[in-house]
Amino acid sequence: MTDRILALVDGSAYSESVCHHTAWIAARLNASVDVMHVLGRREIGTTQNLSGALTLGARSALLEELASADESRARLAQIKGRAILEDAQAILRTDGVGQVTPHLRKGDILEAVQQAEPDLRAIVIGKRGEGAEFASAHLGSNLERIVRASKVPVFVASRAFAPVTKVLVAFDGSASAVRAVQRMAKSPVFHGLQVTLLFAGTVTPALRGRLDDAVLTLAATGLQVDTRIQPGEPEEVLQAVVAAEGYGLLVMGAYGHSRIRHLIIGSTTTAMVQAVRIPVLMYR
Image 1 (cartoon, one colour):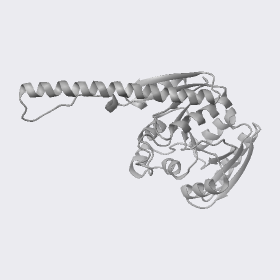
Image 2 (image 1 turned 90 degrees about the horizontal axis):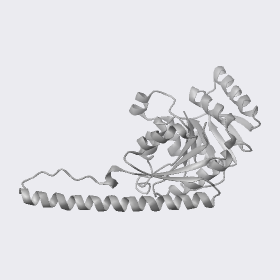
Image 3 (image 1 turned 90 degrees about the vertical axis):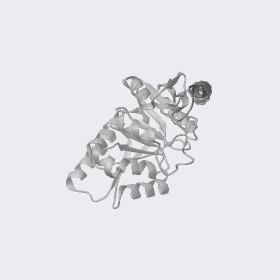
Image 4 (image 1 turned 135 degrees about the vertical axis):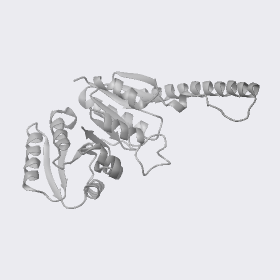
């Protein structure tokens, strides 16, 4: 497995936090960082397909004017993109990251991430993007697409950075939750941190056994770990515990049920990422 982390920045309020969290992870993994900004299709510029009762000469002149405007918009977008990457590099280096490689890409962000993913250890992205101030109740659409498609862990940065000392694991006994625990046990990121496994709901004997196995898996690597079982709906329980007890990171398995079900009724994953105000690390 390579030791490279991809940080996705877009100039939003979350981008600085993405850089600080990436530096924190990179230090614990001794990893290098690729920082990427993707110019969307609207920023690149596309000449409009016009219709209406314009004469041939008028249509030609208007198309030339639009093409010139598109070219200017694309050029400004590239200048802005390079500035965003320069700022991100400066933050990462100030935070102690020795090797930072910038990438300015065009087109679809998911395609850009998937091209880079085979060489990555993890992806860091902000909870919301450039529209964060206007859509504070919704996750960024790019985040949801990336989390659903990615095979590597995705770290979702909150708006503000704070050093992590206490980690809360949302454990529901699912295959993705078990894999999350197994991946945690192998990762230097969690060394020296206090870890709590939290189950929300009613525990069956079978689930109690999986919870005990998860504790043994983490404790075998020297992690300080305890468990909690609390009745209630997972989103409400997790939100209350995070708000009251000073946890700095929530870890969970991502999208454990069928994709069709999520498209119809949403998912616990999305609800919990929306509910808490701390970073969320999701494992597939």
